[in-house]
Length: 284
Image (cartoon, rainbow, N blue to C red; front, side, top):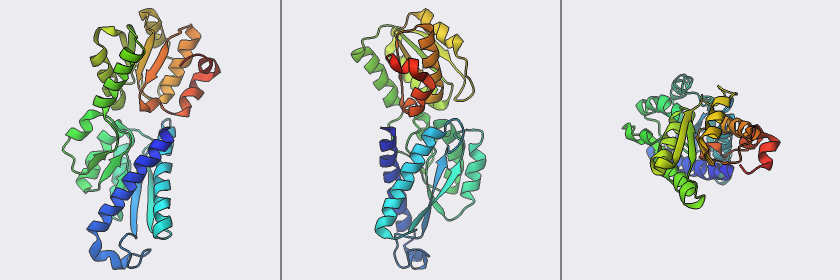
């Protein structure tokens, strides 16, 4: 499902950036190397996000969707009509500014699909905004990203003010849970999502906790003990698939019979892989 979403969003993003680039460059369309007099050709777009590292699964899905959209565009308008350049941030806010500065130094790039993650968006988007390069993120959901005054920032997905309450209402109205434990990974994405869930559930939240970020922790026994001890039947995790799968695995080993719920950052096959066969045979 996430791969389908990534293709759709990246396709919209790519076509929007191409259209904008063409509109802004009509005067130079006759000089385009690949397209000749075709004003739809001769442009470069970039993907910025995780291609390697612990968050690579989510980033690669989006990048492949982006490339698919560009390939489909080129099938109609000519081979190499639009080219894609890739910039690997590893989804890391600490690495993102350096990679972003490398990207903006390439004056041929007219638009960016990404960054996928909220933390790296907070770190890199000021650089893109200063350079005047439009970005479209298919998956960065932190609410504050749209309040920074960035003129080049665009988002093609609902933010945490929509996702958090939606998850909470599902837990409350569909699952009928009265005891819910909420934790997050301290990322810009995870904390915003968890905050929205806690706000709606109110007194139904019987415990909270925080973990380290994706790839930084493997032993979640402290969190597991808190969840089991709270009597919660539902555990909501604001974070990504890597941590969520390991927590699910360790919860199953502890004998906990409840249900794990999370946001789109957990929608990846890596969740089931990290959780293991025992967890997959239980309801998760």
